[in-house]
Image 1 (cartoon, rainbow, N blue to C red):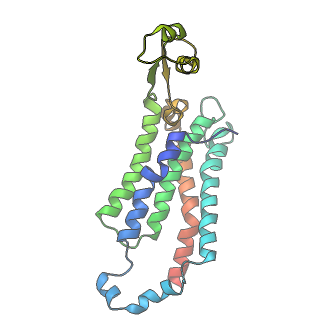
Image 2 (image 1 turned 180 degrees about the horizontal axis):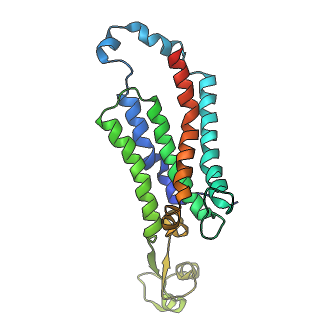
Image 3 (image 1 turned 90 degrees about the horizontal axis):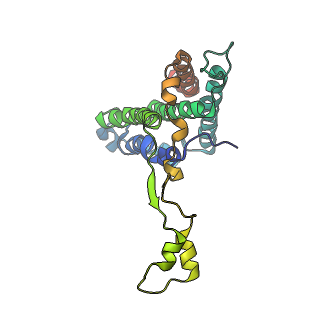
Length: 239
């Protein structure tokens, strides 16, 4: 099947777009101040008895991840992909894999970070900087993919005859000559490693961000992703 995300996005997703906020959350987040924590040993009882981290809780997080994955792919595809009854449509009617890829990449990072924000108890400069910085980073990445052509690396290949006749410090075997001559003789060839090839997303932002339906769909997806946990947390707080 067709791969939805470009390879460079898959490689840096956990490093650039989502890693720092969760690390900051684990290190700095606190639901009570340090004085109360030091003088109230009973606060550690839920952790010892695994009241919060349970199999049901783990399955709930997995279900939420599937829910998010479903929304960021199928809601934009349905809402933007069919002219006539959708919220909007691109110029060619069908949304296309490239447009859907860019939209999904942006929505995944935004929703993952906002979902983490719901769980935060204390907000300081570090939390704000990393949270909003990660969201800004994916937007900058989308602009990079759309307006900067992927880098090409120029590799020079020497014709087979030149390799065979070139004087060397030690003789070259026939196998070495053939290996160094492949691919077939040419002058200079530009190659792009698969990890750096995002050419399919070139100029996509211009078409996607100019579609009013895109912004409405993005808002709808964010609301649907965050609604289950927001409602559940509100219910627990009230009761």
